[in-house]
Image (tube, rainbow, N blue to C red):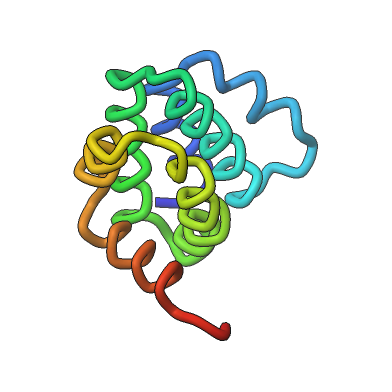
Length: 118
């Protein structure tokens, strides 16, 4: 999956995001994943579980099927910001969030969070 296919996948879950993705003149995997991540963070803060869980599933799918640029963008934007946004969630809500992520994303998260000195 490339950038354009990922954008199409994201807009299936969040149709309103298309304007934000088109708005930026520099269309890249990093911009798309950063925009998608911002929406996911908002969903977490506002406790929009249904759309959040669909978005997490879509993020996992994009990571699984994405090219190297998409995977890198997900690791650098989504995974990197996940700890900050879930820090103040209840334990039950945090577990629900992580349970809706693929095992691959959970492993990348654990590696990033628990690897010191990098």
